[in-house]
Image 1 (cartoon, rainbow, N blue to C red):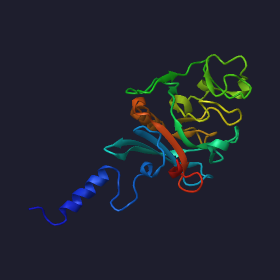
Image 2: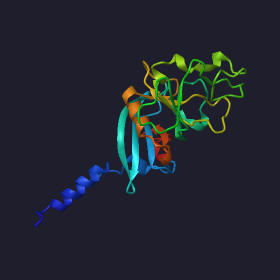
Image 3: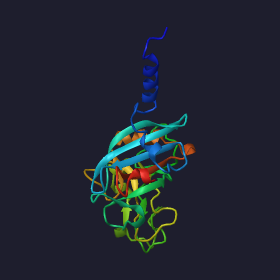
Image 4: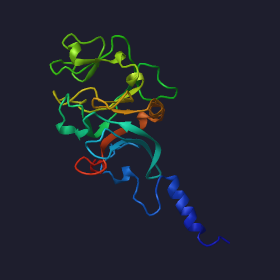
Amino acid sequence: MRRPGAAVLLVSVSLLALGLSPGGPPPLPERMADTGGGTQLITARAARTSSTTGTVTWWDRRDGHWVKAGSSTARFGANGLTEGGSRRQGTNTTPTGLYGLPYAFGIEAAPAGTRTPYRRVRQNSWWCQDNDSRAYNRWTEPRAADCRAAESEHLISYSTQYAYGLVIGFNYQRPVRGRGAGIFLHVNGRAATAGCVSVPREAMRRILTWADPARAPHIAIGTAGGATALTRY
């Protein structure tokens, strides 16, 4: 005979296995209006728009629920976060919103098991941030003739940060000049970023081996509450 309370205990254990707290709120992705339509999601959450640190969590959708696959500390722009649709280039702010992850890249070889298309950084690899260039917000190799070096990132120069990275699809499909270019999820540098999201090196490696393009992963960047709350997306 099952002892009293055993059924409650079994339910509680099952909920914990799914990342749910008995009697608590559902996991963050289940409170979001949109998660991108796939079965993988990265959430990058800060306490408020002025924050330069927060948490990155990656999630899998299983049996109708979102389950936490991993989590890490994170860094954001030196001037915090701002709404992606109104962001201005050069403000050192991280754009909030829901974005695709077009491809991965890195100075180092892709970690074993990486399934996302991975582009190796070479000596002539640049990311154009020149608003006057036809290559604006694009990888260019070599640097495009109309893209000024002073308005671009020479990717190989960032040996720590760009050891591994994922392109965040902010202002990427139809770039708006002046909104911003070169927003990535990458390895931590010494401090806050110029607008990217960064995590420790090992966390970045784990994310690359977890992400599966067949499952349409997206990244949602936002705050715990207010106008830029992640639950809006």
